[in-house]
Length: 295
Image (spheres, rainbow, N blue to C red):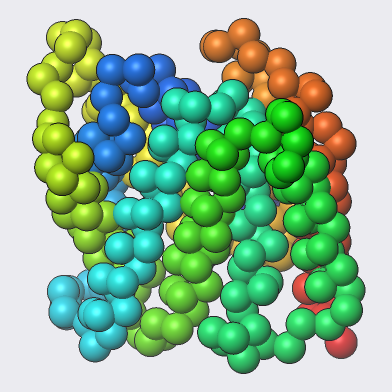
Protein backbone atom coordinates (compact mmCIF):
# COMPACT_ATOMS: atom_id res chain seq x y z
CA UNK A 1 0.00 0.00 0.00
CA UNK A 2 2.84 2.37 0.88
CA UNK A 3 4.51 1.56 -2.45
CA UNK A 4 1.27 2.30 -4.28
CA UNK A 5 0.97 5.68 -2.53
CA UNK A 6 4.56 6.53 -3.41
CA UNK A 7 3.94 5.61 -7.04
CA UNK A 8 0.83 7.82 -7.09
CA UNK A 9 2.78 10.64 -5.45
CA UNK A 10 5.47 10.41 -8.14
CA UNK A 11 2.83 10.58 -10.87
CA UNK A 12 1.29 13.66 -9.24
CA UNK A 13 4.72 15.29 -9.00
CA UNK A 14 5.40 14.62 -12.68
CA UNK A 15 1.97 16.06 -13.52
CA UNK A 16 2.90 19.17 -11.54
CA UNK A 17 6.13 19.56 -13.52
CA UNK A 18 4.26 19.27 -16.81
CA UNK A 19 1.65 21.78 -15.65
CA UNK A 20 4.29 24.25 -14.43
CA UNK A 21 6.08 23.99 -17.77
CA UNK A 22 2.76 24.41 -19.58
CA UNK A 23 2.22 27.59 -17.60
CA UNK A 24 5.73 28.76 -18.48
CA UNK A 25 5.17 28.10 -22.19
CA UNK A 26 2.02 30.23 -22.12
CA UNK A 27 3.85 33.01 -20.29
CA UNK A 28 6.62 32.99 -22.89
CA UNK A 29 4.00 32.98 -25.67
CA UNK A 30 2.23 36.01 -24.18
CA UNK A 31 5.38 37.91 -23.12
CA UNK A 32 5.66 39.93 -26.36
CA UNK A 33 2.15 41.34 -25.75
CA UNK A 34 1.93 41.74 -21.97
CA UNK A 35 4.29 42.69 -19.16
CA UNK A 36 5.54 40.17 -16.61
CA UNK A 37 3.56 41.94 -13.87
CA UNK A 38 0.33 41.65 -15.88
CA UNK A 39 0.94 37.97 -16.51
CA UNK A 40 1.60 37.37 -12.82
CA UNK A 41 -1.65 39.14 -11.93
CA UNK A 42 -3.69 37.04 -14.36
CA UNK A 43 -1.94 33.86 -13.28
CA UNK A 44 -2.70 34.50 -9.60
CA UNK A 45 -6.28 35.60 -10.26
CA UNK A 46 -7.26 32.42 -12.08
CA UNK A 47 -4.93 30.34 -9.94
CA UNK A 48 -7.01 31.14 -6.86
CA UNK A 49 -9.71 28.75 -8.06
CA UNK A 50 -7.62 25.56 -7.63
CA UNK A 51 -6.20 26.99 -4.38
CA UNK A 52 -9.72 27.33 -2.95
CA UNK A 53 -10.56 23.82 -4.09
CA UNK A 54 -7.52 22.49 -2.20
CA UNK A 55 -8.49 24.42 0.92
CA UNK A 56 -12.10 23.24 0.97
CA UNK A 57 -10.90 19.67 0.43
CA UNK A 58 -8.55 19.94 3.42
CA UNK A 59 -9.70 17.72 6.28
CA UNK A 60 -7.54 19.63 8.81
CA UNK A 61 -9.19 22.91 7.87
CA UNK A 62 -12.69 21.49 8.23
CA UNK A 63 -11.91 19.79 11.53
CA UNK A 64 -10.56 23.07 12.95
CA UNK A 65 -13.79 24.93 12.28
CA UNK A 66 -12.81 26.35 8.89
CA UNK A 67 -10.80 29.17 10.43
CA UNK A 68 -9.54 31.82 8.03
CA UNK A 69 -7.42 33.81 10.48
CA UNK A 70 -4.02 32.48 11.49
CA UNK A 71 -1.70 33.60 14.27
CA UNK A 72 1.31 34.15 11.99
CA UNK A 73 -0.55 36.16 9.38
CA UNK A 74 2.30 38.64 9.04
CA UNK A 75 4.71 35.87 8.06
CA UNK A 76 2.12 34.43 5.67
CA UNK A 77 1.71 37.81 3.98
CA UNK A 78 5.48 38.30 3.84
CA UNK A 79 5.76 34.99 1.99
CA UNK A 80 3.27 36.36 -0.53
CA UNK A 81 5.40 39.46 -1.07
CA UNK A 82 8.46 37.29 -1.67
CA UNK A 83 6.40 35.15 -4.06
CA UNK A 84 5.45 38.33 -5.95
CA UNK A 85 9.13 39.12 -6.53
CA UNK A 86 9.85 35.52 -7.52
CA UNK A 87 7.04 35.39 -10.07
CA UNK A 88 7.87 38.76 -11.59
CA UNK A 89 11.54 37.85 -11.96
CA UNK A 90 10.86 34.41 -13.44
CA UNK A 91 8.12 35.58 -15.81
CA UNK A 92 10.29 38.43 -17.02
CA UNK A 93 13.17 36.02 -17.67
CA UNK A 94 10.93 33.78 -19.78
CA UNK A 95 10.44 36.63 -22.21
CA UNK A 96 14.18 37.38 -22.42
CA UNK A 97 15.90 33.98 -22.29
CA UNK A 98 15.37 30.62 -23.92
CA UNK A 99 12.72 28.59 -22.13
CA UNK A 100 15.10 25.83 -21.03
CA UNK A 101 17.74 28.25 -19.74
CA UNK A 102 15.31 30.24 -17.60
CA UNK A 103 13.71 27.07 -16.25
CA UNK A 104 16.99 25.28 -15.52
CA UNK A 105 18.50 28.17 -13.55
CA UNK A 106 15.47 28.20 -11.23
CA UNK A 107 16.39 24.67 -10.14
CA UNK A 108 19.08 26.36 -8.07
CA UNK A 109 16.31 26.94 -5.52
CA UNK A 110 17.25 23.69 -3.76
CA UNK A 111 20.77 25.03 -3.30
CA UNK A 112 19.47 28.29 -1.85
CA UNK A 113 17.14 26.29 0.40
CA UNK A 114 20.09 24.47 1.99
CA UNK A 115 21.95 27.74 2.55
CA UNK A 116 18.88 29.54 3.96
CA UNK A 117 18.01 26.69 6.31
CA UNK A 118 21.10 27.47 8.39
CA UNK A 119 20.24 31.03 9.54
CA UNK A 120 16.45 30.71 9.38
CA UNK A 121 15.84 27.22 10.75
CA UNK A 122 19.05 26.66 12.70
CA UNK A 123 19.86 23.51 10.74
CA UNK A 124 23.35 22.07 10.78
CA UNK A 125 24.68 21.50 7.28
CA UNK A 126 27.70 19.25 6.93
CA UNK A 127 30.52 19.37 4.43
CA UNK A 128 28.79 16.99 2.00
CA UNK A 129 25.75 19.21 1.53
CA UNK A 130 27.88 22.35 1.43
CA UNK A 131 29.98 20.67 -1.26
CA UNK A 132 26.79 19.94 -3.17
CA UNK A 133 25.80 23.61 -2.90
CA UNK A 134 29.21 24.67 -4.25
CA UNK A 135 28.96 22.20 -7.15
CA UNK A 136 25.48 23.47 -7.97
CA UNK A 137 26.55 27.10 -7.96
CA UNK A 138 29.46 26.25 -10.24
CA UNK A 139 26.85 24.85 -12.60
CA UNK A 140 24.80 28.03 -12.33
CA UNK A 141 27.87 30.18 -13.00
CA UNK A 142 28.69 27.97 -15.99
CA UNK A 143 25.25 28.74 -17.44
CA UNK A 144 25.14 32.44 -16.51
CA UNK A 145 28.77 33.04 -17.64
CA UNK A 146 29.43 36.28 -15.73
CA UNK A 147 32.26 38.38 -17.15
CA UNK A 148 32.15 36.75 -20.58
CA UNK A 149 30.88 38.10 -23.89
CA UNK A 150 28.01 35.60 -23.68
CA UNK A 151 26.81 36.99 -20.33
CA UNK A 152 23.30 38.42 -20.28
CA UNK A 153 22.04 40.36 -17.23
CA UNK A 154 18.68 38.69 -17.85
CA UNK A 155 20.22 35.42 -16.62
CA UNK A 156 20.27 36.91 -13.12
CA UNK A 157 16.46 37.11 -13.11
CA UNK A 158 15.75 33.36 -12.80
CA UNK A 159 18.61 33.13 -10.29
CA UNK A 160 16.90 35.78 -8.16
CA UNK A 161 13.60 33.97 -8.64
CA UNK A 162 15.22 30.73 -7.44
CA UNK A 163 16.42 32.46 -4.27
CA UNK A 164 12.94 33.87 -3.62
CA UNK A 165 11.21 30.54 -4.30
CA UNK A 166 13.64 28.89 -1.88
CA UNK A 167 12.87 31.52 0.76
CA UNK A 168 9.15 30.90 0.29
CA UNK A 169 9.73 27.17 0.71
CA UNK A 170 11.95 27.46 3.79
CA UNK A 171 9.72 29.94 5.63
CA UNK A 172 6.69 27.65 5.41
CA UNK A 173 8.50 25.50 7.96
CA UNK A 174 8.34 28.44 10.39
CA UNK A 175 4.54 28.36 10.34
CA UNK A 176 2.57 26.68 13.15
CA UNK A 177 2.05 22.98 12.56
CA UNK A 178 -1.70 23.19 13.13
CA UNK A 179 -2.23 25.57 10.19
CA UNK A 180 -3.31 23.67 7.06
CA UNK A 181 -0.88 24.01 4.18
CA UNK A 182 -3.65 25.03 1.71
CA UNK A 183 -4.60 27.97 3.95
CA UNK A 184 -0.97 29.13 4.05
CA UNK A 185 -0.85 28.78 0.28
CA UNK A 186 -4.05 30.82 -0.09
CA UNK A 187 -2.59 33.66 2.00
CA UNK A 188 0.48 33.70 -0.23
CA UNK A 189 -1.57 33.51 -3.45
CA UNK A 190 -3.89 36.37 -2.51
CA UNK A 191 -0.94 38.53 -1.42
CA UNK A 192 0.91 37.71 -4.64
CA UNK A 193 -2.20 38.69 -6.61
CA UNK A 194 -2.43 42.04 -4.84
CA UNK A 195 1.31 42.58 -5.25
CA UNK A 196 1.16 41.81 -8.98
CA UNK A 197 -1.78 44.18 -9.48
CA UNK A 198 0.00 46.99 -7.61
CA UNK A 199 3.17 46.37 -9.58
CA UNK A 200 1.23 46.41 -12.85
CA UNK A 201 -0.45 49.71 -12.00
CA UNK A 202 2.90 51.17 -10.95
CA UNK A 203 4.61 50.36 -14.27
CA UNK A 204 1.79 51.60 -16.51
CA UNK A 205 -1.38 49.64 -15.91
CA UNK A 206 -3.10 46.76 -17.60
CA UNK A 207 -3.05 46.48 -21.36
CA UNK A 208 -6.26 45.92 -23.30
CA UNK A 209 -6.72 42.44 -24.66
CA UNK A 210 -4.69 42.47 -27.85
CA UNK A 211 -6.32 39.29 -29.10
CA UNK A 212 -9.73 37.87 -28.16
CA UNK A 213 -8.24 34.46 -27.45
CA UNK A 214 -5.79 35.85 -24.89
CA UNK A 215 -8.37 35.58 -22.11
CA UNK A 216 -8.37 31.83 -22.67
CA UNK A 217 -4.59 31.81 -22.46
CA UNK A 218 -4.84 33.70 -19.15
CA UNK A 219 -7.32 31.17 -17.81
CA UNK A 220 -5.15 28.25 -18.91
CA UNK A 221 -2.06 29.88 -17.41
CA UNK A 222 -3.75 30.34 -14.02
CA UNK A 223 -5.37 26.93 -14.16
CA UNK A 224 -2.11 25.19 -14.98
CA UNK A 225 -0.24 27.01 -12.22
CA UNK A 226 -2.97 26.51 -9.63
CA UNK A 227 -3.46 22.83 -10.48
CA UNK A 228 0.31 22.31 -10.39
CA UNK A 229 0.35 23.56 -6.80
CA UNK A 230 -2.58 21.24 -6.05
CA UNK A 231 -0.65 18.25 -7.45
CA UNK A 232 2.43 19.19 -5.44
CA UNK A 233 0.48 19.43 -2.19
CA UNK A 234 -1.17 16.07 -2.80
CA UNK A 235 2.10 14.38 -3.76
CA UNK A 236 4.01 15.65 -0.72
CA UNK A 237 1.20 14.45 1.54
CA UNK A 238 1.39 10.94 0.11
CA UNK A 239 5.15 10.41 0.31
CA UNK A 240 8.25 11.85 1.94
CA UNK A 241 9.83 14.71 0.07
CA UNK A 242 13.18 12.91 -0.01
CA UNK A 243 11.55 10.11 -2.02
CA UNK A 244 10.10 12.58 -4.51
CA UNK A 245 12.96 15.06 -4.88
CA UNK A 246 14.98 13.03 -7.43
CA UNK A 247 12.01 13.03 -9.80
CA UNK A 248 11.77 16.82 -9.52
CA UNK A 249 14.86 17.14 -11.73
CA UNK A 250 12.98 15.48 -14.56
CA UNK A 251 11.90 19.06 -15.23
CA UNK A 252 15.32 20.00 -16.64
CA UNK A 253 15.23 17.73 -19.73
CA UNK A 254 11.47 18.32 -20.00
CA UNK A 255 12.00 22.08 -20.26
CA UNK A 256 14.66 21.54 -22.91
CA UNK A 257 12.37 19.32 -25.01
CA UNK A 258 9.38 21.67 -24.69
CA UNK A 259 11.48 24.71 -25.57
CA UNK A 260 12.70 22.90 -28.67
CA UNK A 261 9.20 21.72 -29.65
CA UNK A 262 7.32 25.00 -29.21
CA UNK A 263 9.96 27.69 -29.76
CA UNK A 264 12.61 25.87 -31.82
CA UNK A 265 15.20 26.50 -29.09
CA UNK A 266 18.08 24.12 -28.48
CA UNK A 267 20.53 25.95 -26.18
CA UNK A 268 23.07 23.15 -25.83
CA UNK A 269 26.02 25.50 -25.44
CA UNK A 270 24.20 27.58 -22.84
CA UNK A 271 23.06 24.74 -20.61
CA UNK A 272 25.72 22.05 -20.69
CA UNK A 273 27.61 21.00 -18.68
CA UNK A 274 26.23 23.52 -16.16
CA UNK A 275 22.81 21.84 -16.05
CA UNK A 276 24.44 18.49 -15.27
CA UNK A 277 26.26 20.02 -12.29
CA UNK A 278 22.98 21.47 -10.96
CA UNK A 279 21.37 18.05 -11.36
CA UNK A 280 24.27 16.28 -9.66
CA UNK A 281 24.31 18.71 -6.73
CA UNK A 282 20.57 18.35 -6.18
CA UNK A 283 20.76 14.56 -6.18
CA UNK A 284 23.73 14.68 -3.80
CA UNK A 285 21.69 16.78 -1.36
CA UNK A 286 18.80 14.31 -1.61
CA UNK A 287 21.13 11.36 -1.02
CA UNK A 288 22.70 13.01 2.05
CA UNK A 289 19.30 13.83 3.56
CA UNK A 290 18.24 10.20 3.15
CA UNK A 291 21.43 9.01 4.85
CA UNK A 292 20.84 11.36 7.79
CA UNK A 293 17.28 10.04 8.25
CA UNK A 294 18.63 6.49 8.46
CA UNK A 295 21.07 7.33 11.25
